[in-house]
Image (cartoon, rainbow, N blue to C red; front, top):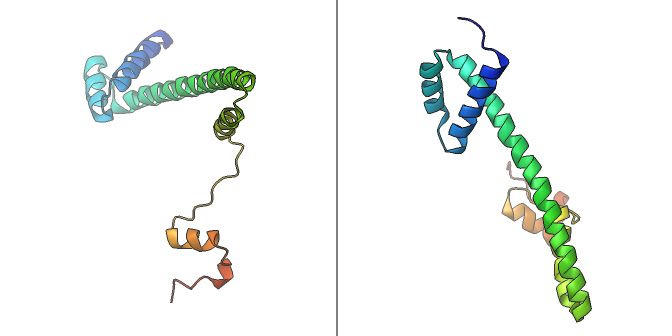
Length: 133
């Protein structure tokens, strides 16, 4: 079987991309593409990988744009709230911006609620009971 040219590969990746965003499962895409294009599963998996990469890139790009737009809206809100003298509203917008921008220290969670609570109330890890006993 001959190797596909770049244009053919791109067309196939586009089609698989469309199937993926329509919710097709990988096994169904494998079967469909292997039959339609008479290619091996390995080649279809390569196309799926390229389509997934494209989905991720689109998401990351849209995420950056959405964050920028949200911050711009918040700037506008903050300006209006200052003019209205609504300092509580300004503080709320500032808090939301801080969350969006990751300015808060990460919240500590150990995965064991008991240990997290003990750490929260000030019990030193040295004083925690030994779970292996």
